[in-house]
Length: 386
Image (tube, rainbow, N blue to C red; front, side, top):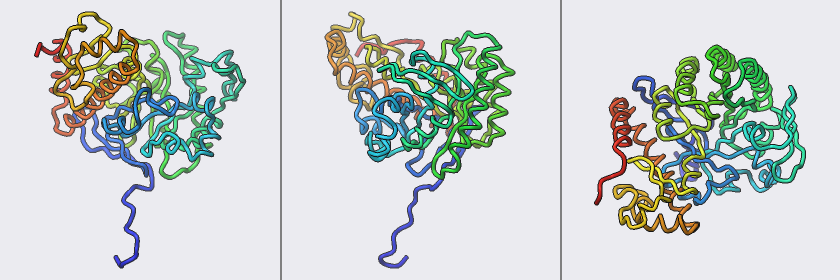
């Protein structure tokens, strides 16, 4: 290449998924796009209002997160999608130049909004903040996500809480399919970005099958599995994953929405899921609960007030390694902000380590043994005294 000529840009220009290895149903892959690569299985920290609570963006990245999640409902209400677009888009606004996934806002409309009214057109609702009236149609949901500039966008769907009648579940699933078609049309052709469909159908196998096959026929860039973090037992979730995942394309990413505990993650990876998000590790951190490779540690428990041990002396995370449980107990009981900061940091570090270890195990071909060892450590409980 001659002097003065620019070097070629090595970043991909479009969205793609590559399957690197499998071990049983478990998959190791990579989702590539212009802003970066997501190593799968992946856990996406939740940045609801353009921030992962009590974390700096650089901290989140340093823990190994390739992608974070933003919330369409919350961002459309405050500060507003058009304002974020005028300020350069969500990546610039939040100082996160890496991939961002946004959910459609549908779940929050159903769970948070006041006086919502469902129709074929969309959902009319009042803001939980100030009571202002809004209309969220499939087209508007995609429009907002495009204004935000997210790399992966979700179709608008109707999520039914379980338990529910088969009639209500089917009605919501069929509406979600019609909305998926409208979202696909609104999204159009956007190189480097992707829109995912959302498989619904509650706990009814035939509805899950129908939803998955109909979305597969739309030839979307990725597929989400929704409605499985709404109060159902884990065995129901796993049964529905066992039905759904084999029906989805092998060469497209699979995203289980809103899940979950470390045990949920390792079991869902066993069923072939690639991507996850959940508020659990950050919310737990704000309420005095730490996740570790030995299981959960409740820092509100008085038994920790004289415990000089850290959460995990072998962790690479300073929050896990460099602070005593006695100090974390003191911070938690004193309602100090540093308690939420340190425990959130610890929890996200553990979740990212859990995902990295699963990726390594799948690639090495010993995921089953790895899963058994992880579960055995959880069953034994806390680490021995130092």
